[in-house]
Amino acid sequence: MNNIRNFCIIAHIDHGKSTLADRLLEFTGTVTDRQAQDQLLDDMDLERERGITIKSHAIQMEYLYNEELYTLNLIDTPGHVDFSYEVSRSIAACEGALLIVDAAQGIQAQTISNLYLALDNDLEIIPILNKMDLPSAEPEVVSDQIVDLIGCSLDEIIPASAKTGLGIDKIITSIIQRVPSPEGDTKMPLQAMIFDSVYNSFRGIEAYFKIVNGKIEKGQKVKFMSTEKEYYADEIGSLKLNKAPKNHLHAGEVGYIISGIKDAREVKVGDTITSVENPSHAPVKGFEDVKPMVFAGIYPVDTEDYEELRKSMEKLQLNDASLTFQPESSAALGFGFRCGFLGMLHMEIIQERLEREFNMIVITTVPNVSYKAHATSGEVMQVHNPTEFPDPSILNFVEEPYINAQIITKSEFIGSIMNLCIEKRGELTNQIYLTTDRVELSFSMPLGEIVFDFYDKLKSISKGYASFDYQPSGYRESELIKLDILLNGEHVDALSALIHRQNAQFLGRKICIKLKELIPRQQFDIAIQSAIGSKIISRETIKALRKDVTAKCYGGDITRKRKLLEKQKKGKKRMKQVGNVEIPQKAFLAVLKLDE
Image (cartoon, rainbow, N blue to C red; front, side):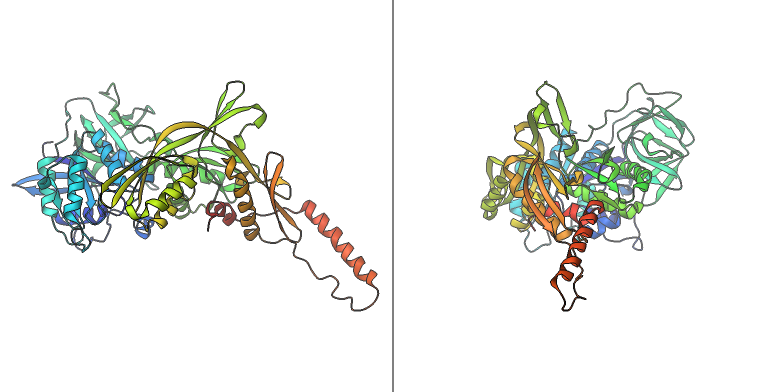
């Protein structure tokens, strides 16, 4: 155990974590030149296309130092705020963390947020100044920021460049010297914490775990403590580039177990594995349950695919424990699921993964957050969906969730960022100059306002420099109303939204105009209306496609033309009664991008 080091890499998005992981793997000889490729651990097509890490990835390296062989277990983590749950799980399986800061961009919001997660778990922090090869690097300025942030000395910071390989040997030496070896007792009953799992269609579920105490052997009978199910450890081993089977693993090691589990609901991330013969009495203290921030409905395009979608969601939840879902139904879309996501990017990625990995084409409804409705009787209801919103006559007041947002930006963008936040009903609570041209702004704002397009707008007005992080700060009373969209007098519940009263008129009009552009013309007039309760606040009409029925009447009495037009008018009226309007998927998504 003294020669094991478990560590993770934490940083803000795009500060070079995955590239540094590539260099570490090459330096320790874990991958050959033939296997080497950029972002080796990002094995999803989606991750490579977007250049972001979505999943944390564990891999084992071996390195000879002072004639002793050390086992280094590395976990590369995502940097985006929407995937912070992946980071918290990785941190729970480690004793040390490499804190990477971009020498050109300095410390950003997510750097600080991930650092606090690591410090809460008493991890040894090794600060690394990456991208030293860039002409725009400011090592002195950024080093001072790191010293202020974590209170280390200047000579503890390792200058490095993941691109050129500068400083990689120093990083490996620091990991061996500074990261403590795992604590644990091999003689105690087995306790192994599951920090991730994947679904393999041939072998069932593969669970990744870190052994806290005891040891596990191949073929041993084990028990998953939260579900109380028992299985045989058909195969165990360590997570090299390709899985390496072993006969036994002991305390401090990180590995995988395959026991032929086919049902995704039987494996929970954060659960403890123990042995059946000599069970542990208490599970390992894992990590807290995830708190979804954004809710949206996901429905299959074809209602017959509902069961298939359920299975796909369960398999996806195995690999992404921050996804929560429960069944719901909609008058317009049939049966589907109400899903909870950590943010808009998370929602987009889930939709994309369902399409790519499971061939499920889905319709996503307008995202919203969860509100608390207080009835006059004193009852408090959780409202996740506009259709659940109670009748205003029995409503006393509504509370919406608020967040504390931190935005770190260059000082030249302060004015436009403040305007954006005030537009979104934010209140400035603090403003600190970190350096002469870098400012940290703190706002208190409603979560519902940042759900749609806040992050994209923030990036565009700050030319990509502003970084954003937030923590929930509780609920506050608010004037919320339900905005309904009607097509030919029928409610489309998938387009309903809960919004603040002052935005209702403006938003209702915009949605109607947008839908008019997107819904294809039919053989009859389509009325698009937005309403609050029974009061219509805006209307647009899509005119009918008309056939020129009078084209054949050249000359003759006007009554001949009138007769044909009257006949057409009756046909249109009848068509309107029986015709229904198909809403394209684009229309559901367009409601989110009203400002474009």
